[in-house]
Image 1 (cartoon, rainbow, N blue to C red):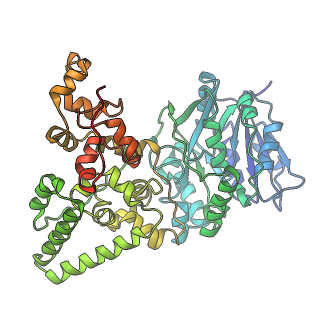
Image 2 (image 1 turned 60 degrees about the vertical axis):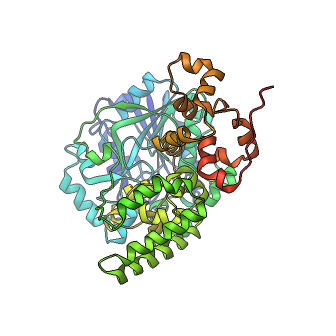
Image 3 (image 1 turned 90 degrees about the horizontal axis):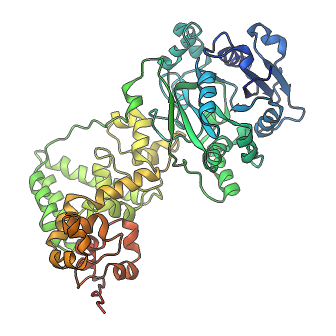
Length: 545
């Protein structure tokens, strides 16, 4: 009987880990499927002691074992070899043979593939242990501790207990709803694997480099596919000396360099919509369902109320240079009026030093920060100083290239110590091999949306001498017919539709004369009142001819 699903697994020197992996894939462990529903194709990529069929005969599963005649450092050729040997209608690939799979993974993947013929079905990855495996190993976590952890959990009795002794890995967490960078259990139809042309054999780095991430990105970008995230099922990484998990920071950097040389761009997590499929068979931690809110103790500071009032009123009317001067003066006054003035001044010096460190980093973009968070400039802050002071508590992003919120969620010790995420990465994280990621495009757009449509910006438009509500209603009668408030309409829709707020301000011309304004995401009139007027930017009246 032809199996419905073929599962390709690649191994290399996994004498300790492989028996557990294959047991987790066996009919004895898997629920909702029979022996004849699937086959497992194990491809050994050059182990000193290659596995044999006799080693696993007791598992009573459809297991085929192959050994590569000319193994390479990269598993890519072994994966493609296994895909070509598969006879199932659908094919799943597990690039890492050291990963256990949860009890319902194969059945859920089968059901999802049946429902979505052009489905790209993926399970999230987790680490055994209580933290990212690289961090755990630095603290002494080893194979013996992991063996004891697994025995104590009695996972062979109830496979879903694996969730109790694991955490999401960097590519798939910190929540069940986080966009994925890769999957170590990726299922598609034979036709989709053919469209994708398998794994790209240009990736020759040890362990394949970023080939698994590349395969995921290319797969979800195939035309007319449905990306399916399996809920309540996962793979669980056993410690085994793998290159990606245990490699040096320089080695990891080379993986990204290889990707850039092949694709011509830096790797980015694909921003796609997910269909969530399945159910939870275990108790789910609340932090894995919703992003964790950073808890920060806010201490009352001298002149806090004055600062807030100043930033929302006079601060918006003054030229940027004056705002900056007054902001620095208020900060200094706040330090001097501190019950311990010497300590206050010292803290101010440290803050300024940290701001200079951040400014020098390519992971911070001052103009992007100011455009995404316009309240920073209106309050008179230097962008880097604001990020040092409030970046952690307000979960703001320093640039599109460093996801500070993800970094805080991924490394709880950073938040626990009250450290700025980017500073921590610059000083410690990079040297320790901690991972980072760019900000998902959806998050960037949401930040711009929040800034663009804030009540503060609506007030700017209402108070502008260049906004004439009566003229706007007469010029665009559809606004009045819809019952919309003219100022709200111009803020929400007018600028994108190139409507003009009054005869004295040509929206399209402002964008044309100052193309950098579009990148900030600000309404053009708001930009002019907050920045352009004091910068001497040119505006043109509307041509009514």
